[in-house]
Image (cartoon, rainbow, N blue to C red; front, side):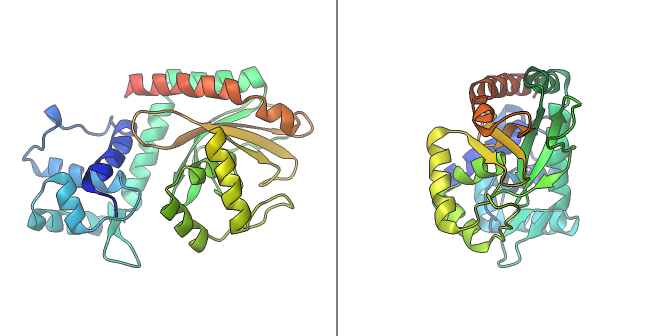
Length: 278
């Protein structure tokens, strides 16, 4: 179990991404009911695991009766949800959708999306920004040069974690206990002959990714398509990735991973533009 001060650091990630939604003046809790509800939403959305009502009360500074009452109300409205295996609370469908929409709105602002298009144009291939939602990779922004072949996803399209560059990068940076839990519970489909599905090989692969700071996809999801990705260094702990992909008919795997330096540059520029617009 994470200590309250560590959970508070998780909250900052979601707050930085969705800062267009709400802020507490002066960093202190206001007395209005809406502020209390938003504080609970932030606490749950900012945690990487379901929380108990007691933990939510500790994180927000609200009393237990108030926390319990608001959690019940937010759960009834599908803003929060109960974890199936426990009495803990996690983000519900409406809060998850709100977070994705907020990220998409911010990324579609002129500067971040223009940078994504510039990356796609400079490489002549498909570029996208993705985040992990409900155990899947979700495309939140995309840009492409209209050429045949390659992998083209639209906003909202989903993909697996174990065989995509950003999905693997996300898994590689999970705490060891969380990664172990994911490996025990996940169903890992073998999409191509190159897809890694075994726990031992995946752990070794994730260790390599963690050490190098970037991830690649060598025809592991789609035969004939290669890609690589890096994390966008936003403030806080939020995990959003930038990746490019191309058909092997136009770009070899070795040529693809040679794009890591330019990906890192664009990821840094996108982070600055995103933070400036937040």
